[in-house]
Image 1 (cartoon, one colour):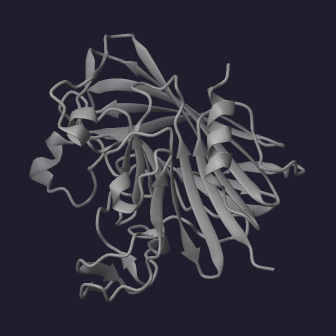
Image 2 (cartoon, helix red, strand yellow; image 1 turned 180 degrees about the vertical axis):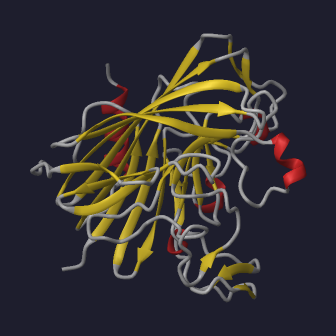
Amino acid sequence: MKHKIIIATLLSGSILSASAQKAELVKVVKVPKQNKVDILIGGKPFTSFNYPDSLEKPFLYPVHAPNGTVVTRGFPLDPRPGDPTDHPHHIGIWFNYENVNGLDFWNNSYAIAKEKKSQYGWVKTDHVLSMLSGTKGKLTFHANWVNQANDKLLDEKTTFTFSGTAHERIIDRVTTLTANTDVTFNDAKDGLMGLRLAHELQIPSNQPQKFTDDKGNVTIVAPGSDKIPNGTYLTSEGKKGDDAWSTRGTWCKVYGKMGTDSISIAIIDHPKNFNYPTFWHARGYGLFAANPLGEKAFTKAKTKPDLHLTKGQSVTFRYRIVVQSGDNTLAPKTITALAKQFAAP
């Protein structure tokens, strides 16, 4: 029987399922001698929390559907044949921002020249505070948002809660940022909670595309020659395809095929998040992000609701990521119902 896979990113709250299923055991396991924690659900790999000193932020990578399909791009860590090689800072699922007191945390990667690194920020994980396995797995970590001189702008405390069934995987992310000095998140387009989609979920493009093979060789493909992408977007407000970008909505969904499987990814915003409902930084080339902090960048508005934190002040963002497999993808009415349930007190 054909399996269909659904990924939904929702805001925190009680675990909600499209159908009542038996919870599978979640194992949260520290990898010896590596800055890495593996998460297994039902005995199968789901994702890993990676926080290597050599990279500029922590992230979840790769992300598996319940049937084992990897729904995140492989490049740059483990390129798969045909993987696009743009934006090397797009790795798995991550959380950071383009302009914090003028420092760019989002775009930092090995591609930035050494003489320009001072313009970029790092999110450095210094402690995994706790891990728990069971019907729900939990992982809590602390990180510092710093400049090149290691001056700290923000303390980050994040808790992931992992759960799942035979056809569903859920990540709840609760991130609290506390200012170590006065901090402004200046209006910018690149943020906040990002996910880089597998090649198949991109929107088909008439522009030249850059790819890498399994040996790392880069090839430029002529416009219209890339036949792999078949995805598109749909928002709660009915915006479709590339028209979803820069618009507001309570949710946005990307969907397409990976092999014989149907894939849907929906991000649902929560009314308690800053500047709700969020803007969708949903790009056809595979970046799918929710960014409530880029109003002027997205709309060319004269005013911009920058987020300011005085020293000691905190802000909390909550997201849920659901990976679900079954015979049906998430219908718009189902996503809307889930949004209403999570918005309720």
